[in-house]
Image (cartoon, rainbow, N blue to C red; front, top):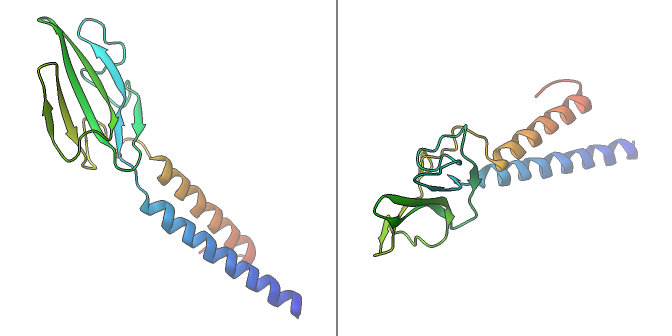
Amino acid sequence: MYTTQVCEFNNRRMIAALLSLILFVTSADALQCYNCRGITNYDVNSCFNPTPQSTYIQECAKNEVCEKRVTQVDRLQDVIDRGCSPNCKAAQFVWTDEFQVYCCNDKSMCNGASTNYYYSTNKLASLIVVSLLCSFVHRLYGRII
């Protein structure tokens, strides 16, 4: 009798902990941006016209947004840098004599990258946790949630 109560209590604690983890992980959705550098005449990373299939995508840290920096090398050649940056400080454009910076922080197609093409690490982790939880409950009670 006592063993059954202890196991039941531990199972409830484990389910509560897993549910808390799921809620935490799913609420921590990260912004994704292209991360590349390209020069007008030599653009192996497809940075001028990025696509999710050919350009590296990076997951931004908290308080970072997507940035596209265009620097003019000479009259005919530009350099483009794309990636996450904490430097934008709520400005959409930063223009100087040397470079132009475009910033954006929305969730869909930001700077050309999108969370719609790839699962972010957090979403993937939450899917794994949910599947483990369902498997655990199925083994415990013999049925699927």
